[in-house]
Structure formats: structure tokens, C-alpha cells
Image (cartoon, rainbow, N blue to C red; front, side):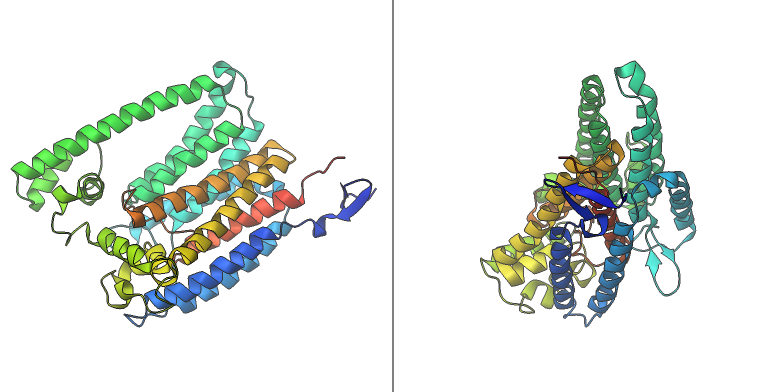
Length: 406
């Protein structure tokens, strides 16, 4: 029998090329159109042309999505190590690159810049899934080798990204790692132990932030005072990272007048609150248009605030709903996957997207700290957008190459 024929239903044979999940590309089309329109609106105040570049990135993304969807996803397993170490090399190269907004996160290629941390999310996920799909799973003794390999796989890029510094991207890796370990059916003792460690680390972070608050009350905010605290701190966090956390936990303490670290959050909340049910209309939002929501963040980190102000609850729900349809589609593909590698890829992609959506929309609504994570398919940015298209192309490949049974 032709290997490219698969059984669908009672006795029907359909070629692999017709096995497509069409809901995902339709959602991507909707999100791409929304992205271009609202980025243009967000940049109207400063006269930016980022929307033109976003249109280009979307077209490139759809092309990559189509190509990757046609490739058998098992191909990525063969070259997972090469892809991983190539990206790690890129993460090392950024330290020789330009400092932008106080961080070294980009490699300047002249015509455009690439952000290796975004590509690292993809390559690390693929290698982690490859390792776990080949590792024995049983009790803790049998599983420990695979767990240690995955820990090293995720730990190296996390460390390099944290040094850039990019705390937001660093925090995306643990949920992906644990989702892969869960799909691989690691023993419950491992997750219980990890939860205890997480609680302890959360306590250490809380202790550090509390003492940072007390230190601020007793010392002026000079550069010498900041360096002195960082040198004696329990955690290797930068001063601005502690400010973001303290602004989230106690905004009345860190920025009581709302003109410092709390400014963007307040302006985003105003944008969302004044959008109402139907919004003010495309291009009619005041927060970005008048510059209250800074042009440096309106088109990327806080694009959801622009969407909510101009299209209201309807537009915001459409944006989040389209992403959630994609996420649920990934989980559905994971349930239909023919092997553990395919299931882990699909679940990993869904967790990555959900983490970005929760943190990005959450920081706009004031329920999560401001970390600078982009909103998938809506925020401006080539590296993350292309990676998201690539990831979903892999999930489509898992769907296309599944084995249907009667």
C-alpha cells in the first residue's frame, strides 16, 4: 500500500498532503491582520513604520509555516543537537553586541537584528523532547538520567539569557521543561520534590525583595547604594528587576505618584478601562496616540492595551480567543500524535504560547509583573514571530504525519 495513504474513517484512504488542521492557519491570518492594523495605530503618534516590517515578517512567517508543516517532524530529532549548540553559540555572541535598553540581547546583522533567546526557546524544546523520547522512564532511579539531561539542556540557555539580562524570557523555560517531563510520565516524586524547591525559592525571593524595600527606606537611591545592595544580595537580580517586582507587589511604595516604574502599567490599565465593550475605533485610542503609553512599548510589550482601547472587550476577546484556539489545537494534536516526541512538541508549543499570553496580558491588566514578554502573533518583532510560526509548523507536521487507526 502507498505509504502516503492513511486510513480515515471506515475504509477511506486520504493522502497525507490533505491532512491539514485548517483552524490554526485561519487563526494565524486573523491575528496577523490584527497585528499589522494595531501596530500601525500604536505608532501613529511617532510616525513609525513598524507595521510595514510586521507585514513582511508575517509573510515570511507563513512561508516558513508552510515549509515546516510539510517536513516530517522526526527530521528535527536528527539535528536537534546541532540546532541547539548553534543557538547557544548565538547566545554567546550577543555579549559582543550592542547594549539596547540596558541589555545585550540582539545580534546586529545590518538590515535587521535577531534575538537568539527567542530561537533558543524552540531549539531547547526540540532537544528536550528528543532526549526524553529516547530516555527510559520508570521510578526515580530509572528516570534520573533523563531528568538530569533535560536539566542541563534547559539550564545552559536559561543561564546565558539571564545574564543578558532577560528575566522574562528566562522564566518561560521552566514551564516548557516541566510540560515535557509531564508528557514523558516522570514519577510523581520528582514533581513533588520540585514543588518544594519552588516554594523555597519563592520564599528566598520574597525575603530578598522585603530587605530590598527596607534598604531603600534607609538609603538614598544612588548608584553606590544600588551596587552595594547587589553585591550583598542573596539573588543575582538587577536593580530594575527588583523595582519591577516591588512595583507589582507594592506600587504605592515603589512609585507612589505613578510617574516612574509604575507609569506604563497605569497607562495600560487606563487604555483597557476606557475601551469599553466596543472600543473607541481603530486609530482613535488616546493613550498611545497622545504618547501617554510610550511609543517604545505600545507596539510590542503593551500591544494588548492598544487593542483593548480601540476595539474594546470584543477585539481583546477575539485576539485572546484566536490564540486560545491555537493552543487547544496544539493539545488536540498532542492527543492524536503517533509517538511521544510528537506529543511533547505539541504540548511544549501550547505551554510556551500560554505562558506568553498569561504574562503579557496579565501585566497589561496589572495581575503579573512587567517582564517584557511579547504577545504571540500580535506584538511587533521578527525573531519571536518567526519562531512562533515555525513552532506551529512543527505542530502541523505532527498532525499531518499521525497514524490514524480504525
